[in-house]
Image (cartoon, rainbow, N blue to C red; front, side, top):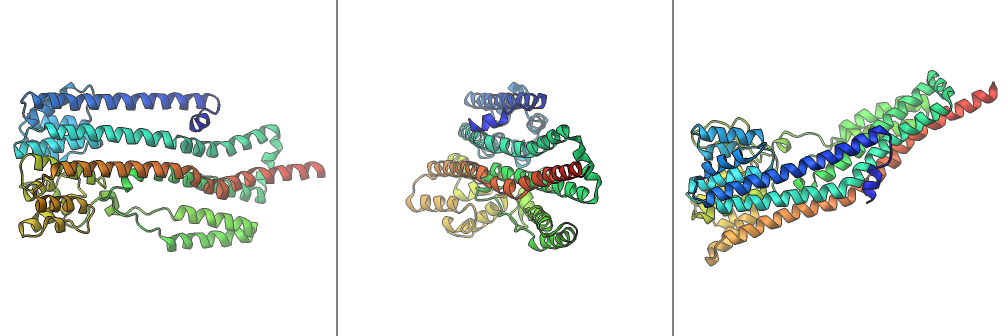
Length: 430
């Protein structure tokens, strides 16, 4: 309720427009979720009636009112004779549940299984992703509202003071006033950037909890210090030590943002990723899935392959062709090791998929089916991601105290107090 109260602070027409946009966005998300669920149900019904996996996918896409463009293109390519396996190796719809559906159907086509189990897994994955997204939106609503209010409130307050006393604008014509205005603006922008980053990191916590997600790169401290030191010296000489320290702190906070790393963006796990991403007889895929993570989806695909009757080595080799990109080189190496005589528990040791190898090893030792245990493992991985997202959302509101205290409040003080004092002294002198 606190988050809703903050979002509904009356800010005139812009506040009403934002509220209307929020309701429209929630309605669109709900409609899209229902449409995707209907597509999955249609595909499952077609498979249960005896349709081939490719035919079932085409039927589901045709029944969807507005399928994602990549999914529509995949269905059109299958109509023209392309194998579902090749299409699944390149699928990237932007929806984890739909990607899992196409990949599971590709496994079913290659292994000769019906594919109903794969659709059931995709339905469960889509439901879990939707629930995780809903919980995250609810828990971060207050943080989003707070970040927005912290950005707007200083500007509104400054405009209010200017309206009450227009003489304040004369302060910014003086050299000290110009410097004060620039510093206030710089601190406000830095505070907004910091707040936005905190909220964004809370939203990304679920993906970062995935065992296949690459570790975040270290901040470039040397670069940040090299930028902050000259700023401190210049401002400290002209406006004093406190102003210089504030500017240096703002530069440090902005400069310490995590740098973009090519490996983290692509989600690859080594030099063999490109080769592993291409199906046999094909070149490098044109638009592979570059999202990091995908451990739960990989485990589910292996479970589908095992349920079709494939041995562990065959299941891993098959899934390596169309799993999420971060898992492909790991599975390719694991399949080679299995054929070379390694124990299943050792082929993925030290990787994000080590629990998958442990389940396969225990299954081989005791002769128990691995499929049920793999499905439970996938559910546990998803639950871990959901818990990480909820914990990060709870911490986000506390973390917003720092940009508020160190940047937003000093920006407000520097932008409002000096012109008020200047106006008072000028008026008294006049």
